[in-house]
Image 1 (cartoon, rainbow, N blue to C red):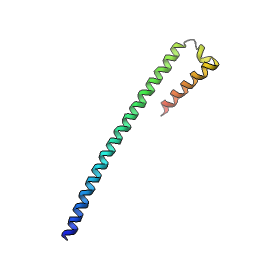
Image 2: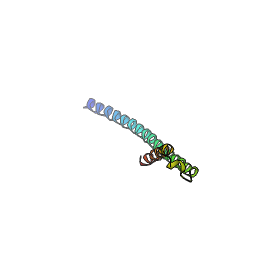
Image 3: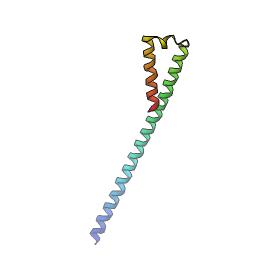
Image 4: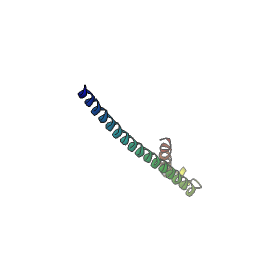
Length: 86
């Protein structure tokens, strides 16, 4: 009887230790995910500002409508739109 109580106590203590360890790791990973999301949001805002600056530079849309330069402008715009959706 005493040995089974001793074994149960050890298993209970071990379970508490494992759960506490997993909880600390979970919180660490949640912090990493939150930092990554904040970084992505700041990059999206920076890219939107870049697109707006490019549009202001090209007020007459001479580059945006040009075939060669316009395709690059369109690719930049599409890349920013993809980042917005993530």
